[in-house]
Length: 395
Image (cartoon, rainbow, N blue to C red; front, side, top):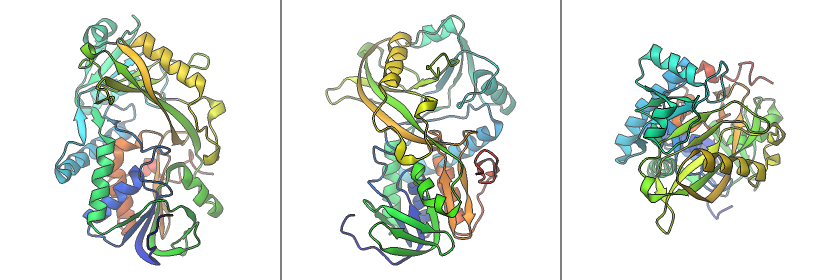
């Protein structure tokens, strides 16, 4: 632990310094709550956690109408955050859903389901066939592929967001303490015990430490039923003459053997140190044999077979790919219904977990809701779909 003074008391203690914890701290700051301590076992949004990286998707294109409405509310809050920060936190360039259409929902929904919801809610989109997709973007879709393009979607600049919320919290006097692992929480007493042996008494505790939340809540019978999935993503350099043509995309394909079929990618948002344009791309599934219940049992290195599958998809389905220059495994905590857990676990304890890789687009809504729970208020929108009491997460 860094050589910092640990307070004995605080109004709110937040466990976890990723997206959820920092957005909660920033929201508390905006509501005038200053006596806040945030504890992070390593460093804020570190590379071994799920909030690391430069980009995440934002969209309203969901097969679930409830999530679609919550995404709309999150986008409203994003606009407020951008006004507060004075900088661009989201980059709007559209999002292409494309691939196979079949009567089954995946963890990201489906093309037919998204089209029904967008029609119902009046969300603008373009329907494209395989020829139109290939003419418009440097993609090589199969002839039977179809697509939906949502022009108002884009990328959250997650690294900028983390920096903005960190500044906001520190400016409010919050203590953000890194290299400070937590050993235990006491939901009844509202206390947090550090691995160093020190204890902080808190009026409210917010647990928002991703897959590691399970370790703190299990001794109290409060851990929701979640799995930990190692999710692979990477950066690839691309041809400079096509750099401006790459879309943000998600490709739907049915599972075939050990290929889960779901892939995604971003446009060029950054360059290598020597100036080459690069895109981020990833796999949106984890093989069953790599899914674990214990957070510390997750694979730490990118599995060779998943890297091979991602390389194969990119080099065979996207034009202009040059080489893979960075490969990362991120830990996703997954409920069986691929929805989050954001709820009060007791009079003095609130939780966000089960982020499933989709949480960042909802970040300001998540932070605002956690902050409201911590000050004794209710969230401004109905979050019953993220309840701790639903069957998908009840132990």
